[in-house]
Length: 500
Image (cartoon, rainbow, N blue to C red; front, side, top):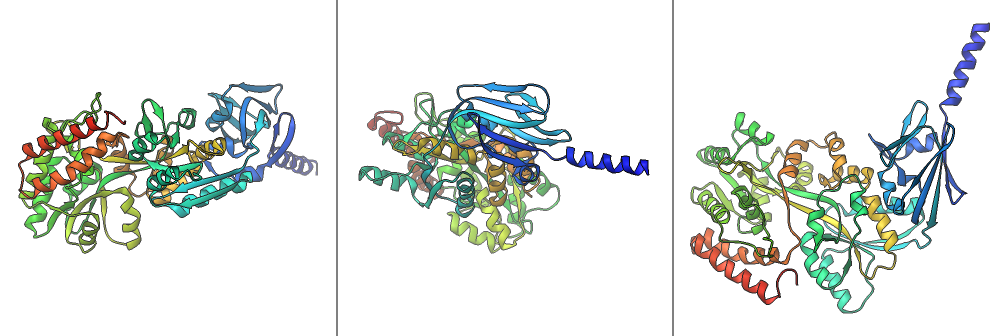
């Protein structure tokens, strides 16, 4: 009997010891409490629960005191502490909840007390676009429910155009807008946006793509996700065996690219198809043929340099050999779905559509160029969030950006939509959800973001016309590029130089 009593007592002791809670205070006043069970229902990644998921919205915070089951308390001090909460994670351990923050580990957390100012204003208007709008709306709605906010999320297909029109009419602008990099020169010139301070991204676990949104050394948007250019392959046409394995693993090069194309042509199929008239696809080959940068230090784009000439001539050779059929996106996708082409160059955004259709396909990163040792570098198309200059609630807009940069949101959104997370520490976890994680990771590592520079917009519009003339045989490569150089230089000069 005595042994039984000891055993029961021990079990009761273990059970009670396993139950923990964390109390949250602001300026010494109790705000809320999270039980073990409530904490375990919060979104968590392998790093644990994101600290801001426990804390109320505050304007600023200069101190955080953490009480533990042990003696004393741990205090953190920083004048930008509210922006650095996103560095913190709580993880369940046998002895309770452990906080990792500021490079330190605090075990047995019992309570957290903030020395802070509450954020009282809780209304916001957000404009969103591109793929994944329903999923994005739900993420924002979850944030609003958690913090008692009134957030109006509006889908706007042409955000740049509409925002400029509202500004010209002196209308009411939203607080937060989704943007892509080529929006920034015009929106910044129109004084539509305010800079996003660095802690939004620096403290978020390392966000890639900040260069895509930096103008004149000011960060104008916080990266959210990105798409990459990839090669989507029809395995029924593409040579199977080692050729396909090398492609999917990212070990193929331009020689293998041509070799596979010739094998497909010999079988009576169209080998490759993409919109080679667009500079959006040319940029990748320019880098693969040795171009070090798209925008020169003086703001120009060199169009008559050797890498650009070689890149255009390579595309011309592919077409003349019958390995490339040039089509715009809708026509290209149609013939791919019909099974009439071996591989297409498209964006990773196409993957969910192909998966839903249930077709057989494989994904490969762009090939390497054996002559230069460089990859044909896929363009990385970043989408991010900017705070408008006339935002009525810029602090709440900032807190929402931080939430959208959290590990849980980044993992859920990108895994559901085959997007690539801007947050770099989510990549390893994404591999558990994504069938094409290897080629997408290689594409991200080899890729280049489009610069937020007006010179790129001029280059893109000019090359659209000239590439048609070259690929149709109506114009020589060198002549076309020299003409394009003169046009772009003239337009830049007329606009007063870089991003004016």
